[in-house]
Image 1 (cartoon, each protein chain N blue to C red):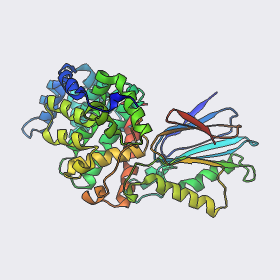
Image 2: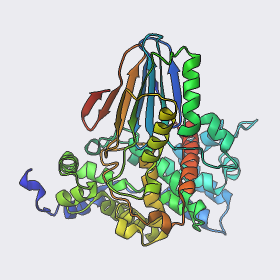
Image 3: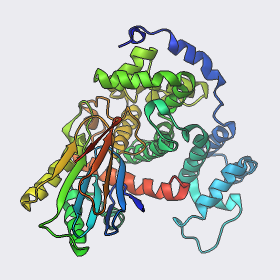
Length: 163
Length: 289
């Protein structure tokens, strides 16, 4: 079965039952997984920043090549693509994983918590519940979901959990 | 916890003794970098030096003819390619070519797959150069070079004390301590100290040696700009999850790091975006996939 590897700033939506969507080496970035097991359709986006930065010379390129660079602009786009592929808002589930953090550091450098806050804000504003989350900690993660199946697998530090 | 961890056993001294057995950094690259900095040198002299190294020649031609530049006509001779590329791109290709044999290796103790360290090092180099330009640091290529080699000490540890790295990882995890503290407890030093020693043996400039030595020590890297740039570059690349090892987030970050470099949160967000775009381009061109 096909496996799609999603990297920083990318999003992938698949309707192929059994296809695997995975993001490995998830650090402070935040993997948002959305699935509708009935449709079936599933998607994974890997957000890096809370909002798009001002980049006079490269803004368009960043938006085109990294649609999931920023949560504020990328998450609505991600939902739009999922809906176009048959997602039902009544049947969907949302999981989030990532946002690792250092032992200590200034808030301006805590990209994980900034992105996490932005994602939560958007979901709450749209009354979308999170089915499961695995965030924070001092470790990298690998996040996997399979189209047509319920749940998200998170591997970290020699351990594995199902959300 | 085993008593092994309670007292250094002069492991560090033994590692230092063995460093002379490491393959040296290619002299041809060091000569080429010196030529690039010499205002009296020329592209012809550089081409004459590099033309006898088939791997470097191939990399330079492959990079020049990559889709990134979109040339209408293929360039097939080295001197034309060097003229077209310019100093910055030449430096980056030379360093990337020379460091691949060292950095493209699995490091089991740090839970790093083949290419993880290379990917992490290239991204950190790009990040350091981006930050150097943003902070108006006068020598961005030096920031690139130092950052590319900032974790070279991990390779020496893997070669000489690979079997003990798992113990360091477990110690850091179980006692929730900084990874460098665990390295000091077990080895009497950390990978940054060992990396600096290697670069000194390879006769790299003192600025680079110092920045590599300091890159995980907040009290030290806050003292000078290049060290601070290298530390911040590493921190940003870790956050982006690029080529992470088991030690990735087990560090402290100095509260004044951004102030030291006069950077704001918005600057950091812009940097992260630029780093990702440039890193993706480098993956396409250097076949990092």
